Image (cartoon, rainbow, N blue to C red; front, side):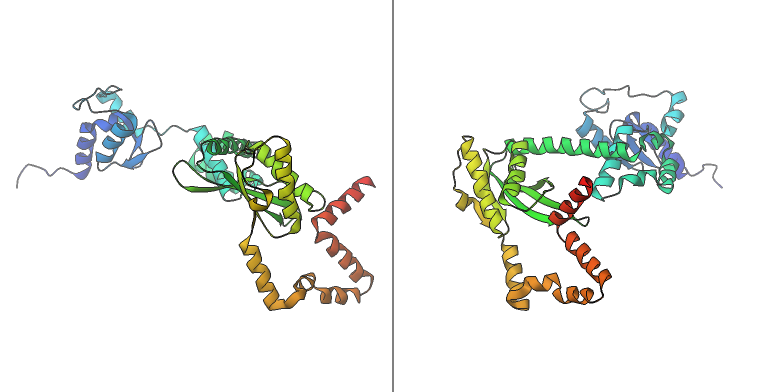
Length: 334
């Protein structure tokens, strides 16, 4: 029997680690090479990808290649073990950014950070994250900061846009009965790509008149500094939207802004809304709006007596954001 023993796989990996120059610039984290300068990591069984990453992303090269390494290429034997077992440092800013991304993209309640189960899960991964798990008001402040930062980025995109900025808007009643006006900008960017972004969601008070709608849109245009870059407006077919566009163009001309198209030309119709009206007419006839009010159910509740009448009053108030606002004002005045 030969006295020469077969090298074990762990020995081969150890030799490879000692020879690979990329280990001078990375840490070992569960059999993965973790870059010291960015969050990127690769499988530690092969060092081709780490070598390429260091060269292309950080301009760090092997001392045997052209160019000089930016950090010492040799580690002493005494520091090698501590180097490979060192934990990746906790980056508070990165964790906080990822936390805000999760809350905003998945529509998570601000109060979720107070959940004991959620905190236990995070602390089991990185105890250092405890200080970052702040109260709901702080999380809200971080979200608002992200909103303002993103708004500034969108402003910069508008400045270099290849096209005019076109606006679409639509009224929407939220589940808690707020009248909200969604305002979306559409433009052609420097990369010849059509872009769209929700730039405002203001709450409307009072009736949905052309004055209210026009002011909300105009305030948003002023906020993004795009009054002189306007193109077309696309809204649904309500007559108040016609006069709202006219009011906006009239105000801009009064300010001295030169518009290349008239209000009538700039006012586009929403084809989806038109199709919706046509289908309702085909199914329900000309009295489709009456069916939405559910007049039969209204009469049924009325027959019950005082409770039924109270039900109808409450429903009539809640079905309209304007009536709800008026009811709340009366309560405040009393």
